[in-house]
Image (cartoon, rainbow, N blue to C red):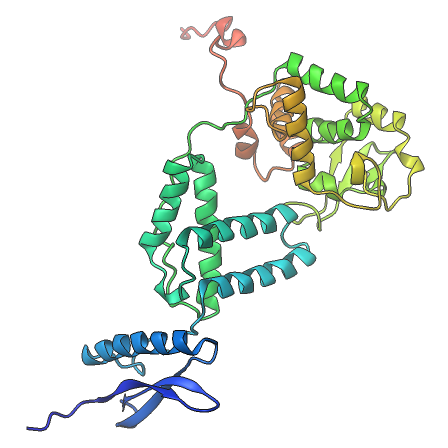
Length: 378
């Protein structure tokens, strides 16, 4: 008894100019057999290519036996690519975005380091369509449980993987994003803390005494002007308006990609004048190479690295990070100005973001409420 099959099994074809897996199925539109080819020329090793072809044939034939028909599938022609090659494609695109300043140096570096760590954990350079949700979860668990990174860092890795795999879906490397349904870990309290007055004075005094005036200026810009480290690295002498006592932050270096102005407090303005910043070429970076005005730019990693050296020398807590200067400055300014004024100086989109930076660790209560007569009216 002949059994009619609506497909012809997959088999490996090793032609002189092209190596591929071929199979045929009934096309519902024509009711005739139509062939499908999956080219394998990108696999240079003949042995690896044949091994892969054999596995692929088994997989396709099982799918065909189960009723699979690529002419009915949503996305039958996914491009076969290894994880390492897909990561290179992704980083190439992000490199171009970095050149156009639509992403910052730190974001590009994070993409590089985190995806390489992910690929190294998987060990085998798998084909991208073989990547599963469980493999991603295992990697994240390894980071969080074994390497003891914070929930914030673990979630940052997940975000990077999601962005990468979203790119791969768009490139037709995979049909769905296997990281889409993975949940974030709940964040505990921020590791950064407000820097006490005495510690802050000690840091600033040390910098001034050791001739690090422009690194000290970077600290002031973060502490009093709330200019982010990546933005500080991109600021030039021409961005300072000495007459208006302001700093212009161009869209190309701003985190939110908007050109904005911040006000320089009087003591910081006096310090800038004392450094005779205006005597340097206008196109010099304010804090450039060797932490002084220069035509050569540094990165926020340089700023953080110097901070780590300071921490080692002065022996202050690791909870006092470079970015803690901004937390501390916002908290102190909220004691002087209203929250709307601080929001504008910090260039936050709304007051709730500014409020996140405030310190609620004090348990002494509100002195003004203590003296409030809040009796019911007669």
